[in-house]
Image (cartoon, rainbow, N blue to C red; front, side, top):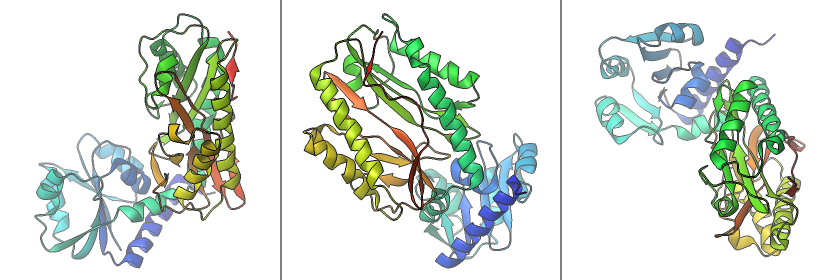
Length: 363
């Protein structure tokens, strides 16, 4: 039976193969998600240094025991004075082209920690890690499904949480509490609960606005399980007499979601998937009100590769996990976003999210 350590060793093997293919002699990782993916180490601070034959994990005294337990296949380099001293000791033995995470290493970190190793030819390695993490293994798939199931259950509880007079903030707290009580270690991102005009803001923050009958509602949430994220959005009219325009826009959004799902297959570029939904909304007269990309990859980060925006050249591989989330936002009126959590297989998409999708929710 494949163990967690077997999976980590395979990831390390594939990383070394990728380094060899791109001509890099080593790579240095400090991004928390990249580091966790390769090493298994869950501490908040640390660096991994990986060559073709050696692998070190650099961290301070808060995490020495955790590092030994979670990353036994890495040599622990204990930080006793400073990270700079520990890293410079390792960097002295590196030579030639070495990869680093240009997207996440700050200018200050590069100047203090990397540049002093002037004998090293530092090169961007972000694309290598993104490619490795795009295709999920069996362990990742299982954790993502658990996170999605908890999120679905919270969505099913929504009707019991909504009542006239309840505030956005109160509903957001009840959803967070529900997910934590049912197995989530944390939220994947701050929950969005938006009533009325607030729903026209794609990233609205829950506040003191209170629910009343005949009001639009948008809820975007996700559980996190063992580091892995879920993402789900549901929008509906709370009442008995929805605005005619709302129903029309809701149906157009659902149609755009269906168009993206039907056309989704491995090998497509992200911008093509975005265009499937965007064009469907355009035909229905709502193209100018779609304000963001149609989706994104999900894993240890809530937003990761592949990107599914109108300018994305990312190619979608089989085995990737993504969201599809077209939306329509009419300023100062209401907004609608419908989002599904999807695994892309060789033969097409599997919709993992199973929460009901209501156009109207009657009090």
